[in-house]
Amino acid sequence: MTGKTLKLMKLREEVCALHAELPKNNLVAWTSGNISARDPETNLVVIKPSGIKFEDLTPENMCVVDIDGNVVESDYKVSSDTASHCYIYRHMPHVYGVVHTHSRYATAFAAVGREIPCVTTAMGDEFGGPIPCGGFALIGGEAIGEQVVLALKDSTSPSCILQNHGVFATGPNAEAAVKAAVMTEDNAAIVWLALQIGTPLPIAKSEIAKLHYRYQNVYGQ
Image 1 (tube, one colour):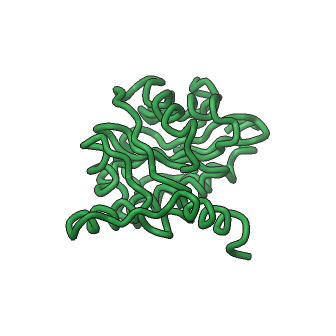
Image 2 (tube, rainbow, N blue to C red; image 1 turned 90 degrees about the vertical axis):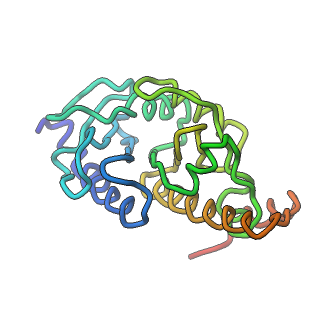
């Protein structure tokens, strides 16, 4: 391991450990889904290798790429979403963590091209509005990243769903992005269940704004 990437060992360990949260929270199936984190000092990105089972992931087999997606160090093929993760980092400089899942309830909304409406106080707290649905894009290049950036451009939400695809969540670090992915699925499930009963009651935008401000600026220690 080179001196440059030795400095990223803690980030490798963090990204590897956070991947366990995806199956633990029922956000992924088999080898689908991935997490990446961008190092603020070097701008290098640590991301999951392609097609490796979650239980077989180690800090050592995490892949390291530069901000343009070029491999810096890896013994494996990098995630097929690497180019899109890097596109997000280049165009959203406040983002240092990205998570992608195909979690069931959120992806059900994506399958019909429908945003997840903000109809609970928990959604107001976390997302400050609906979770937007971006357009369709094929896997393998930057096109998915482009859709994510467009979907989140004018949104307070840290996450979005992409048509016919799944969830992309962002954060100021990888753990925050994982939290956003978990909360996206949890709230998608609540909204879906509410839709089976009837029509969810809307919350006024002004009230959502108050909820979001309190949660982001007052809640917690």
